[in-house]
Length: 88
Image (cartoon, rainbow, N blue to C red; front, side, top):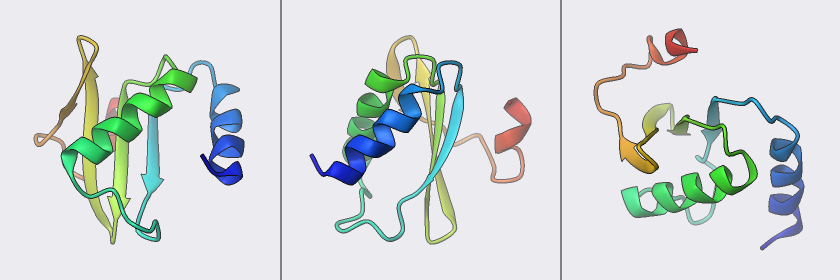
């Protein structure tokens, strides 16, 4: 794991009540584009921030929303970009 990633997770771990986060993955190489890759990333983030319930992954201004439902990360197709932050 890269040192930048560890620093990022260190910052996240301080946000003990964080429920929703948006991450821009447009510049990542390689970008996590498959559901399996995004789900793996969501699980990794959840290790450091157990309170997280929704993650919005932005890639080239296109949001992909994952929600934690009964301990599983699921793709959320019913959320539009305009309403993502209204659930907070």
